Image (tube, rainbow, N blue to C red; front, side, top):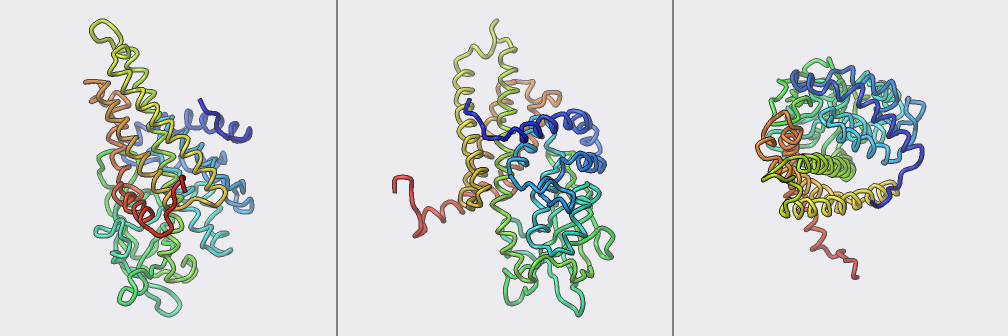
Amino acid sequence: MIMRNFTEEQNMFRGAYRKFLETEIAPNIEKWREQNIVDREAFEKAGEQGFLMIWPDEQYGGLGDRDFRYEQIIIEETNRAGACEWYATLHSRLVGPYIDNFGNDEQKQRWLPDCVSGKKILAIAMTEADAGSNLAGMRSTIKEEGDHYVLNGSKTYISNGINADLVVVAAKSDPDNNPHALTLCVVERGMEGFERGRNLDKMGLKAQDTAELFFNNVIIPKENILGEPGHGFFYLMQGLAEERLLAATSYIANARRAFNLTRDFVMERKVFGKPLSDMQNTQFRMAEMDAEIEVLEIFVDALVARHNEGKLTSNMAAKAKLQTSEIEWKMLDLGVQLHGGAGYMKEYPICGMFTDARVNRIYAGSSEIMKLIISRDIFSENYTSKLD
């Protein structure tokens, strides 16, 4: 096995976080699946132990360490524990940085401490019924009226939609003249005109609350606008590369967990009087998956290092997201197949993993969109290859 590049402090953090998952999160997953939502206390318990948000500066309650490897550890261990439905990374590393990167000092002081402690839960609302990957197709609007803005529209498939106390919402601020002029605002729980729809009944990821959100003449104070009005499209584009690296980190960790579960099963399952692992087909298929997963594990580690250096590009992130989601699905399909009838039974983890992972080739940009991003680079004037 190729040695990985984690510091001693990070390895200690991994051990502590693994123990936290084993005691506070994993034992509750089944209950949360039955109730279709994670208890809010999970976020507060993580916050109390310093596991929720690592990067915020100490004045906001964080450690002030922005090394992406901490979130990589959190993601890997959460997948290892079979607890990916506790979507803390969405709160911590996907939404939180919008406040950090585009918020002013007053906004950071107002919101970040409660986000670090887990008292307030974050969500981001971009997707609409007719606007997923195409943000320009968004219909929600935000218009300036005197000393405030007015937000109207609706969003769907919003993760943490029920639990969220603060929602970063993207809406068009000049729909008639510039479809790319988006403004980001923070909608707070309890604002008049802000309503939540039902907790959506999904194929998988049952414990992770996903909802429709409705905004009917919601008055947004100017103090709740993130960054410059009209610049939201560029802000969202800046965050997409990291979002896809977060996804890739999760998907390849989940593929490895599926591999390990399948390896254990085929070594125990007897077929024609001998272990299934003695069959050449099993050996060849599992060898193929081990090689493909390890190549991507190394690639993701390399991209984490580049991201820490500020050199991660959208093209690199798209390649990682595309390949890891496709290999994860390939491994899970093989895992169910090699489990035989047992793979179709909910009592075996591979069954739930299979349905949970189906969204991963859609979420954070579908595989088709990733191919489009990559192809644009291939056929641009700036294209270079390793041989060049």
